[in-house]
Length: 281
Length: 326
Image 1 (cartoon, rainbow over the protein chains, first blue to last red):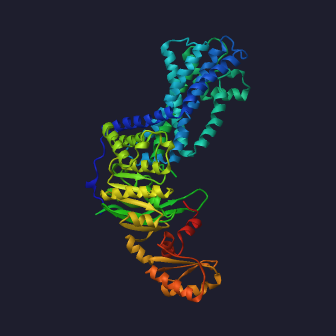
Image 2 (tube, rainbow over the protein chains, first blue to last red; image 1 turned 90 degrees about the vertical axis):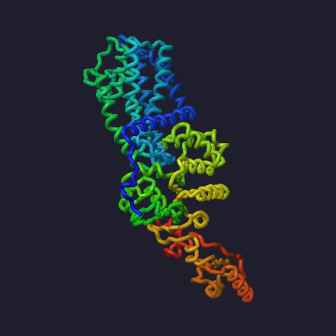
Image 3 (cartoon, helix red, strand yellow; image 1 turned 120 degrees about the vertical axis):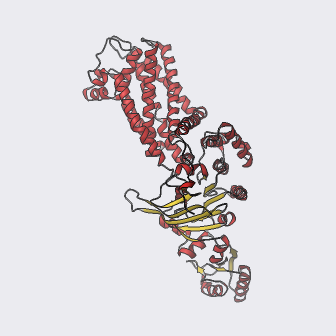
């Protein structure tokens, strides 16, 4: 027999759909939290590696690199924060690719769940990992002598900006993970792209010290804007090396906020749409 | 009443730098309520593609599909609460325990926390998974994963269950266990569409069988109907001297109900016969009297390869090799 419209079940109401969006997002987030608990690699990456970076940079380079008017420890911390959260955003890419390979995406797609839930759970997982990293890094930083020289609220705003920037990147990585479908490729490519992106910036050295082509790149690099914004909000910028007069360096907080909005408004719809049409193998 | 109905399904893939592939080529299918229908065919015949279309995973290039009267293509969201799917590749989260996997699926069906946990416990009991309930899936055997995956498909007591090659890759013992589970489900009146490469599996589990090849149904009927058309059992002989093959083929032609098949090296001959035991005795007596020596002689039930040979003129294995699988 062939369908008649009378046999269609009623579509869920808007309220029900929003409630499902929320609960489904939470259930898939919980799935990723359990994974963090069970796969110690992720936790090691999020806790030990940041501690190592803070110690290496502050003790090895602090004596060599001279930042006029500031201490290198103060200067470097925002750079380490930014680099760590940027790398922390890549789990979403490899995890989506792995889920596709394992076939569990097909299971999810045949369930009457919200189509954005898996992505929300995935990016929330990265957000939590990065939040843990931030706490660990800030505690380590405080021990080695880094200080928040602004107010508590501005410090909190700096943390929020770092986490939001990485959260937006997670959506981009999730999309790439579904496009590329190979966790190995995603890991290698993000390493090859993100390492130069975080190093050719003002994260570890003042961009003014770089040779011209690198300096131009560093000044326009969104990671530089993030680092500069975090430095300003933590009160770690002191009269010293002149900040580049490029707009993104003069208005780093606005730049980062605009960047976050642009990335999210492109990659959230793109990722959800891709998810709705994807199938393993 | 037809519970699942598909008409004229086509699916054309256009891989980069290669000619388009017709995964489905006008496939018609209907599954009556409360029955088990098997899609029988080799790799690359279009079985998984059919299941993916019916379970809302992919959109066909043309054709229509209805489940319980609801248009699958127009209202995928209304289809999903009705169906359960278990695939060839166990779609479970390795890092979650058996219980957590089932509970998560229940929650995503919106059963509610309490009902979902209760159902997960029931399924663990039903599928004899108590050992695995509280350990991450990572350490499980293939058979155990497959059982969790199947349990996941049954969380909501679906109106129709799709099983895509439920036993492919399982060892014989796990396969028997899986058959038992499916048989129990069928006894409870679940409508099932299952795909398989094994005639024996279709024979054992399904009320009706659709044989598919190159994205179309090429034969359909009950297991008995199809087997009758395959010509009963096959009689197989393995000769010591290849030079005897012409003589032996003549003898086989007398007892068989089709032309005997002779292997390229002339050592192996086979023919289908309605009364295979009697035919075998007759042939052996005749060979004995002529002094023709054998390594081996026997009977076997028709295999998918025989079915394909009869229906398409090529064997199932050749077909895979020709098309490069998938």
